[in-house]
Image 1 (cartoon, rainbow over the protein chains, first blue to last red):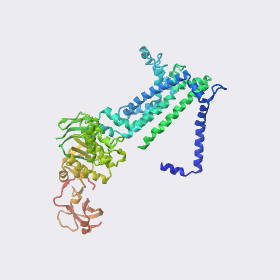
Image 2: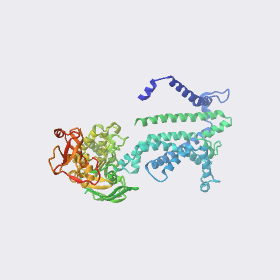
Image 3: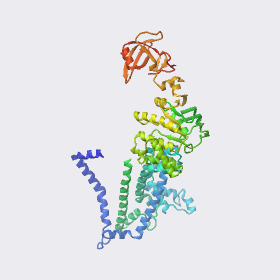
Length: 283
Length: 326
């Protein structure tokens, strides 16, 4: 903290110029466009109707909008749950065990971050669609449909947000090392007790951070879900798909309202993340 | 015999960490595994604890075969070089960990934790977090935690290695006293020969995966089995092709004995209470001699001075098998 203060004491022309540039850049790129969304959100539905918070709520209460948000939350919930459990497992595997192909697995885990979500969607369709997919027919014969239904959308969302949890946990696991875990086991703790009482408390903030990031990412997922979802009203239309559909169908006001809710969720996530970061910095 | 180690082999790929190790550690003793870094002593300790597995061989702890037992079933206490305290738990919780895992009654846990914290002089810190303790205090905490479960054997891996010299000295005196008080069979790994000589009842010298010698500190110092043990337990220099301790070299400014070798002082320096003199003999050997400052002053040893050196009568000398730079 002391260093920061010291830097702040020397304000030169360059400092002001840089500050102006950064603020200007952020304003043009982020603040101004988002403020437009907020403004439209609270604009009256009809030119002569009342605007404000009432109008906003009214748009959100539309059954198709509640359905879309419900579906988004369902998808995000399952995707985050899967990523948390799976992410913990993979992180432990990558950090604590050495096996052939470990490096390749580590690289593969980053793939969902670098590949376009649309490609993810297409890949899932190729693998799981009932017509041409590798697994699709088999699953269809036992009555499970992946593509065009919620499981497919959960999979797409989970795929895209997979690395977020893992990339948060791995550095912390590496940093804490194995000594405390070994100490716990020499004190009589079995594998589960060691994980519950030693490993998990040490990585809990990283895990929480990863979960929040993953949740934020899942709520906003569009491309991959767009491909695997039927995308019709009351049939696989998530919040982001709803925004796209409404916007292209000249129902912009509800698109803005839904968009505003997503912005709120993102801001909330950022606030939570800021609070999570703090205890981590303290240690 | 408390710990019976027989025929232990361990390799990491091509690297042989331990080769046919056979050691018996008697109950109630404080044993040091002494050797240079990378010699395999820590690996042996981890194999005893079950934190590592041997490729072949058996470990018997108090008469029962522990070779295949996981660490949590061996009832050993392990103390790590970097403490490995549980950072998110208070001092008291750290000590209570093993007892809570064993589901001991709450009152017993509280009583035992209090006892142990008093033993390691941390009673007033019981509600602190480990991050609020100094290195020495953390290591004492780790020791209390390991002792809490009443282990059959206490294993310490370079326990004082991460501490500064002053604290290290204090803690090793303290460890010796603690051991006399608690009397649990203790094995500790160290690369510091002074630490081993000062604290241990018995020393096992391990080098390049083999046991070089086992014996009491006096045995090792007075009757080293080979030039490695001699060289590792203290300073050595070569005189007349033999290894000898620098303080066992007699130095005179006159040729008083027939067996003395003539040479010239090449360098003379004073370190604290002692003086170190380097003598270049006429045979081309560089002999280092340690003597008291007053003795050196009395002889007036300066660079260029002609001197005669010989092993003191009764001094230990071991044939040198390799070049030693002292």
